[in-house]
Length: 260
Image 1: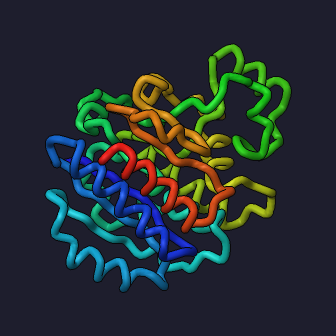
Image 2: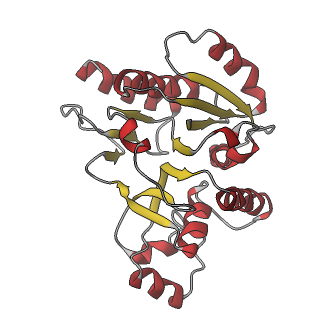
């Protein structure tokens, strides 16, 4: 059995965006041999539990995990995605796929799960090819040494986006995630959502792979080209510049334009 999960915090209206993700998975993924998990803040746990109770439109199980915290800002809400190993059923799953709520999959996700994964590797989408961007706060903690950047260049280690990632469930991966959660709880350094620490941690270990999520099956943008239907792709309506209501409108407009 495999697991897909997403996280919600700070703003309960984000659930409306997650519903669009759920609908796309139901429509375009053929075999539903996975569960779907929502990790959420404490103050919205009961509301989302009621939603799940009456969600009869899906042919896969939807579960919920309470992060036992309430986020004061969106950047802290995003850290919920690191709490996957607090979920008491996590050991039931072999492969774990995280997907941001502001994503829709017009791709059959069975193609992702059918790939044989290596232990302790995070499968990610390479966001850019410029090694110097490792020292940007979006993709690190702005403290790499020149020697580390040279190693990144020599080993083709690039900044990646944490809107989607896949990994095989192992004890070492559990340790990685628990370390990052602990780090974030004590870190007073500036950071850009959880993406900073995930890049910093996995890139330094060189435990990343960019061959699964590529421009052939994944696209991310701030403003979509409404005229183009991205058939058989995972579509990330990314960007923190939009309010939740604006992002809902953007995604629904795209859905209506292409009868998705």
